Length: 318
Image (cartoon, rainbow, N blue to C red; front, top):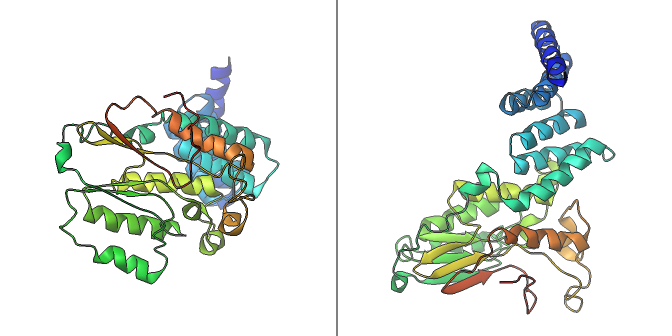
């Protein structure tokens, strides 16, 4: 019965959409694209639903249009992209219950790394047969490439000298998304492999990003950074870099339960520019959950890396 009703709603929505498109009423077209997307969601035709919902959101930047796109993306198995849409819906209407429940569903799904996009990021065995004697590992953090001299330093690294080596970048590359990715792209051209784990400064919403509405919050920025890293072949997940040698990046955040002396207030300074959907007591726990799916018994030499000082005993039974 529900499917028959959904199919009838879809047919009516398609008819209305054709009529509205002919009239070129942007608001009306957006509403009807959204209605057809809703019907497609009921039919679980997720790919088509995403297409229609994306068109509706493009024509009208409303909380409802954003939320409907989030529902379609989540149904299509894309929780990372869905999260951003739900976050935008809540930025427009903080009381939108459906957007809140959708965002929470994404926060639960993302740490499982089950989406096709997330699966592509894990290149665990790519270099597992490489002789370890040929592998040299370098590590750096706090590059702050927003500063001209630091960006130039990256550019001036020799193009050939490190082509057999691995570089670990332990966060705080730059303030803006664009500068982080541009800097990592430069470094990727200098080294055989580059591993990256974000720091607090990378996840802050820079004034230009707020002004241009680039990201609704810092988790959306984190997800965008991870997606871009995949595109430029920068590793963000554990991987072998040689025979029985592994690099294991660890996502993390301040934990006031053990960090009281050095950072009693995680909102001091630059961290106040981070915007989170979770309170500080839940945030660090969510960050740790991002690691759980990839924590195994790696036999051999394991190099873990985090931007933040970890507990003396990590909270994992490994």
